[in-house]
Length: 217
Image (cartoon, rainbow, N blue to C red; front, side, top):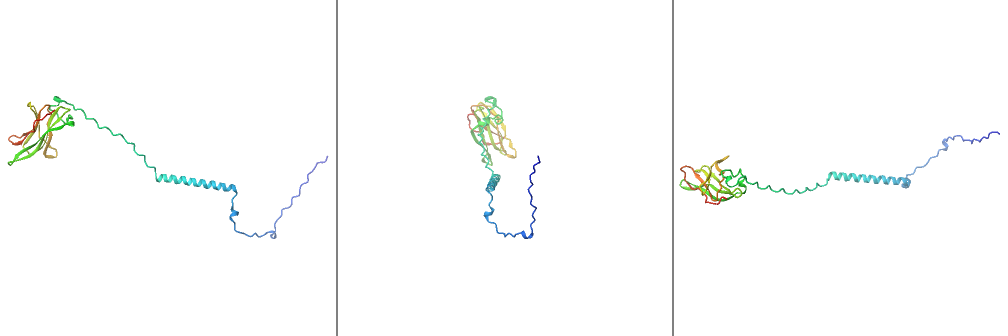
């Protein structure tokens, strides 16, 4: 049986344009209607524009936060620290006799129970030359004399005396940097009745030398 053959369609030859076939097309300005994007492209532009707006807003918020930081939180109130209690004295009554009231802490609750101005006669005139005080501490059960004296006055020392004849004395020492001011205290004495006394220099005349008797405990 002879083989079947399929006829091959004829392919037209390529056509070359001649100069006479060219035509001139007039140009006209494009109208907005001609520039409309397809519907799908419009949505993409909207999404891109929205993303740019969000990014700009976030950047603006970050810049504001940097330039205007949030106020610092208020400090948490700290409860007040209670004052330390007064340290108990290291002596009481007879164990305080002859000791320094400042070193033993007896001055912490001390009070002045008697006072007197010391006077001396100078050129026939009675003049004040210092002060005397009796200081007493209830917690220590003891008393002592405190003084402030002009060191040029004829005062040799200061003492605390009891009615039963006991005494604790201290010389008048000038304050460092103030040679004309003597200030200090005597050692302590335990007694129910005491007084502070200014001890005159030998041959000197003090018009007023002592406080009245007072309770020392």
